[in-house]
Amino acid sequence: MYYGAIKHLDIANGPGIRVSLFVSGCRNHCDGCFQPETWAFDYGHKFTGYTFQNLLYLIDNPHVVGLSILGGDPFEPENQSEVLELCKTLKFLRPAKTIWMWTGYLWEDVKDLPVLQYVDVLVDGPFVKELKNLSLAYRGSSNQRVIDVAKSLTGDQIVEWKMDIPMG
Ligand code: SF4
Image (cartoon, rainbow, N blue to C red; front, side, top):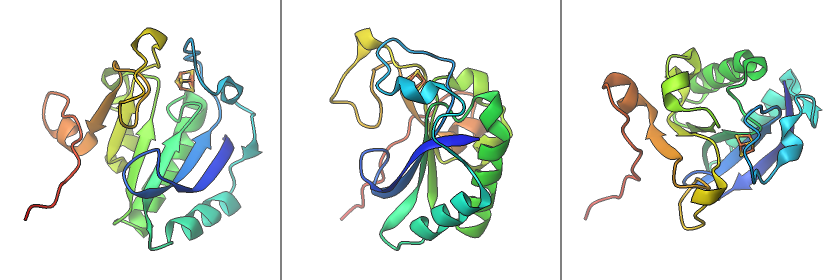
C-alpha cells in the first residue's frame, strides 16, 4: 500500500486533534474530487513497518484522540489487507484512540468487511459535486453519511454518528 501524506495534528477530519493518513488508490473518480493525484495506487510513499511505528509515535501524543484514514480509498481491494492490519494492531495497542475512516463506497457495500470491527466512524459515499455543501462537518457533499459503525453493525439500520456533548 502507498500513502500520499500523513498529517500530524489535523483538526479538520474528525473530532478533536487527530493524526490523518491519506492512502493512495481510488477507482471512484468522483467528478470534482479535490485530490485526483491520489487515484494512482503508487502515489506517494510505500507504507512500511517504519510508517506504522511513526504513526504510533504521533498518536501517542496525549493531545491526539485518534487516527483518521482517508484517501484515495482505504476500501480498495489493494489497500484492504494492510488497512485491516493497521486498524487491528492500533486498536489492540491503543484501544482508547478512535479510528475514523472515509470511503467513496457505500456502507451497504462494505459493511461486512472485517476492518469495520475496528473502526469507530465511517464516512461513506462518493463526493457529488451537485450536492457539495461546505457547511457540513467531516464530509463534502450531503449524500455522504457519518456513520456510527458499532451501533450500525448491531442493528439493521444505519445510525448516524452524533458528537457526545457532556451534560451539566
Ligand atoms: S472517493 Fe474520495 S478520493 Fe476517490 S475520487 Fe471520490 S472524492 Fe476523490
